[in-house]
Image (cartoon, rainbow, N blue to C red; front, side):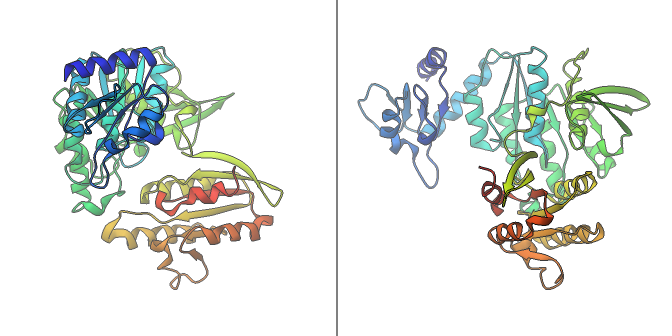
Length: 432
């Protein structure tokens, strides 16, 4: 096996190759591994990989082509290769999990270190499950001092599996809320599974942000794990030219840090600062939230036109949980902008608590007296008879007609919901 590993490292160095599992993502000189799943066998697409001029293909198909290497079990090969890479890596590994903001935290910590001239690698996009983690490990830059990974779970014992592979040195839980609770017995069961990130054999330090029962958490964590409740901290924000100055205090000690953004990024800046202090003791950095940490559609403001009228989309269409949706509605409501409309998609994976949380969001809309709100998805639609004065649709398509019809009274459009509602397609109707 080590002979194959050395070939891979040589090709990666020579061509700056990426390792990919999907032939559709192959670029010239990449390395293809034919991953076998329950529904498909990637090795069967080796001809597509060769046509796209890979430098190497590792598959479970015997063939005499010079760019093919045969292995009996590609998943077993991947498992062993990931272990070899992590055993060879001399830097420190950072792991981040949480109910919301995992990718933004991961990107932000990466940009903080990078902007302070510290060689850092981070996992790809929001690839945070088992296969996503292995993909990111195999594409690591072994010369970096730090490597930042995002870990996501939606079932019991998944965190144990991820931590067993990665064995991180520093771990952050950005917050724990009710998202993906369907497959857990209750909220405490979800919390217990998130806390398994701290079971790494190499753990040096960790931080958890938790806003619920602090006594329960304090009993569960050991001394090397630091606990904060970000919502309970007193914060004062001052806008200074292009920066936000954040003043806050913990245990009577005062801190002052900078951020590229205000609003919801303030908490990310504070938590990032407190977390990084664990492994960089004498911090002299200036900024603790960088604007580029928000990738793709994550909270981006997009401008377009509807019937020749200029509008702004506030795009949170990638995901939603009861906590994040509630908070972002409140934030958008407080913004000093006019002619607002809210496009709210339903939330998935809430199990038996789904009706309760969707009803809570509807009640929030009523209590805030929001004028223009569209609810999308089956989980919301079941309440259409109870709340007859509100607007409910089963999917996003009627919302397009709604926007076109109401455009005279619309300038700022907030869009948020679980990805399966396909609200991104609604935005793409207007933002090309």
